[in-house]
Length: 107
Image 1 (cartoon, one colour):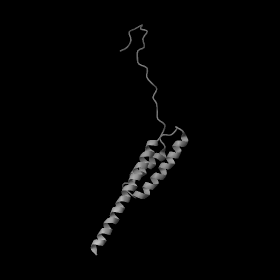
Image 2: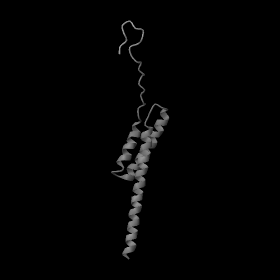
Image 3: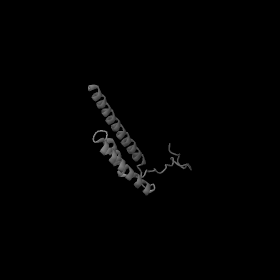
Image 4: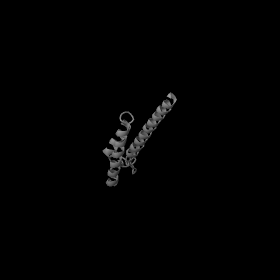
């Protein structure tokens, strides 16, 4: 409600200035994109590339001393890439175990 005419009270609430986050590092976004793409195409190659880009992005973010963001994307890229590599490794191990058991049963 507006203040009555001639009132000494202000007519609105003060607004705080918006706080903006620092811009995200583009290398961190690329690392996360590669880590996600690794689930669909070339799991080990793209997973390792995502880990390399994540390390590079981490160094850039640390060197910027707060001027660059993207720490969450770096962490997510590392987690997704390592999970992809682990699942792929387990799948290869399971396939080899299956082939070994099948070969011994065929004798």
